[in-house]
Length: 80
Image 1 (cartoon, rainbow, N blue to C red):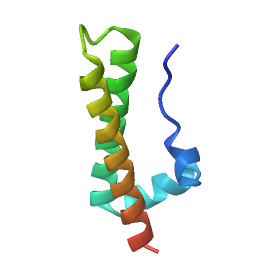
Image 2 (spheres, one colour):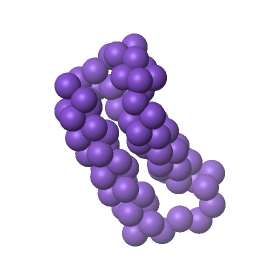
Image 3 (cartoon, rainbow, N blue to C red):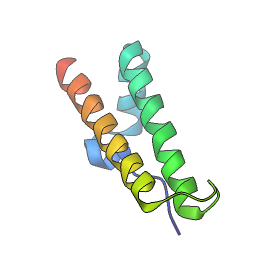
């Protein structure tokens, strides 16, 4: 059963800390929102509720999620 990707574990940051950082940084907030949308699309695709999606389309979504996470990491590091 597909589940949402654990962004907090990947970033080694607590949900509260990320929430605080998002509140003070609109760009970071948008990046995390975009990541959550992509991750939700992947979960739907893996569950089969997104309709007929090819393996290539799923791979592209996963690559897009990875790029989104990389942008979040860059933004977090820039804000230190």
